[in-house]
Image (tube, rainbow, N blue to C red; front, side, top):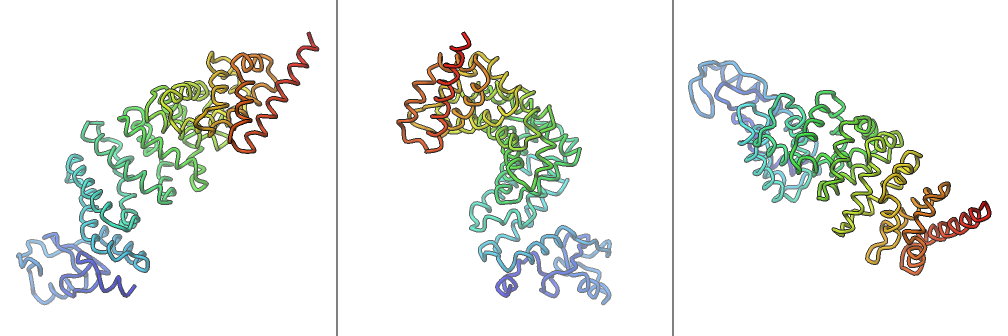
Amino acid sequence: MKEAQATIPHLFRCPISLDLLKDPVTLCTGHTYERSSIQKWLASGNLTCPVTMQRLHDPSFVPNNTLRHLITQWLQMSDQINPHCVSSIDSMSALRSKLESDEFSFGYKIQVLQRVKILYEESPCNSCLIQFGFLSVLLELVFGQTEAKLSQEYQEFVEQALGFVVTMVSLDQIQSLNVLMEDSKLSRFLVLFSHGTAMVKISLCHLVEAISSSVQAKDLSALLGSSTELLHEIVQLLHHNSEASDAATKAIWSLSKLEQNIDNLVAEGAVSGLITYILNAQQRQRSSIRVGMAAIEKLLVIRRAKEEVMNNPNGVNAIVKMVFRVSDHGGSESAVSSLISLCYDSVEAREEAIKDGVLSQLLLLLQSQCSAMTKTKARVLLKLLRSKWVEDKRKL
C-alpha cells in the first residue's frame, strides 16, 4: 500500500492539495479537484480555475463519479498492484472516459481500443483492464447500445471490443456476463449473432462456451440454451467448414453440459450439424474434432438424438471413422461410447457399423497407444457386437 501511495497517478491527485482525491468534483473548465479544496478556493473570492487561471463563467461544480470509481478500484487493488501498471493508470483512465463518452463516434472509439490494446500488451499486469473497469464499459457498449445501427463502423468496433471481452472473461470474470440476463442485452446478443460479422459470431461463441463452462453462470447458460433462435444460429455455423465452425462446436459442447439444454440442441439440428462438422474437419485435420465427437456422445443420452444419427446417411459412418485415427486418438473414446449407445438396442445401427468397418477399426485401436479406458470400451463394443450378432442369428 505504501508503494502505491508513493506513486499516486497524477490524474488521482488534487491539483490544489496534491493529495489523493476522495470527493472529486469537476469545474466548467473540465478540471477536477477535491471538493473541500475547491470550495476553499472559491470561498476566498477566487473566480478562476486554479490550473488554467481561466475566469469561471459558472462557479458551480459537479461530482466526477467516473473518476471516483477508478480511484476506488485503484485503492482496492493497491496491495497487489504491479508498479509497472501504476504508470499506465493516467492513460487507462483517460481512455476509459473516451469510451464512455457519447461525444465520440464508434470510428474514434476503434482508435481508442487500439491504444488500449497497446497499453495492455505493454503492461505485465494482465488484470489492468479489469481493474480499471473496462469490462463493464465494453459490455455496456456492445450489448447496451440497443438502438445502434449495424453499420460497418459499428461492427468493426464490436469485433474489437468483443476480442477484449473474451480475453477478460478468460481471467475469471465470468460473473460479469450475467448482465446478459437482462432482456434488452440478451436481445442485442441475439441481433449481433444473427447479423454480425464472422468474427463477431466467433467471439460470441467463445462467450457462450465460457458461460456454459462455469458454475457461476448456470442460470445464464440455461437462458441461452432455451433460446431456439440462438441455438439455430450456432448450429448453422457447423456447416461453414471454417474457424466459426470450430467455435460453434465448442459452444455446443459446453451448452450440452447442462442437461436441460440437450433437448433443445437436438431439436435445432445439432446432431446432423456435428456430423457434418466431423466429416469436414477430418479433411481439414482440425484438432477440435474431438470436441465435436464428445458433443455427439453427450447428446446421445436422449432417443431423438440416436434417431437423428440413424436418419443421417453419413451418421454411423462418421462416428466409425472416428474410432481409430492414426495421428490422433483424442476422439476415439467418445466415438466408441457413442457406438455402444447406438448399437445396444438397434439392429440397424449394428449392421451399419459393421458394414462401415467398425470391427477392423476396433482391432487397430486395441493395438494402438490409446488410453486404458478407451481400450476397455473398445472391448465392450466388440463383445456387444458379437453377442448381439449371435442373438440376432438365433432369432432367424
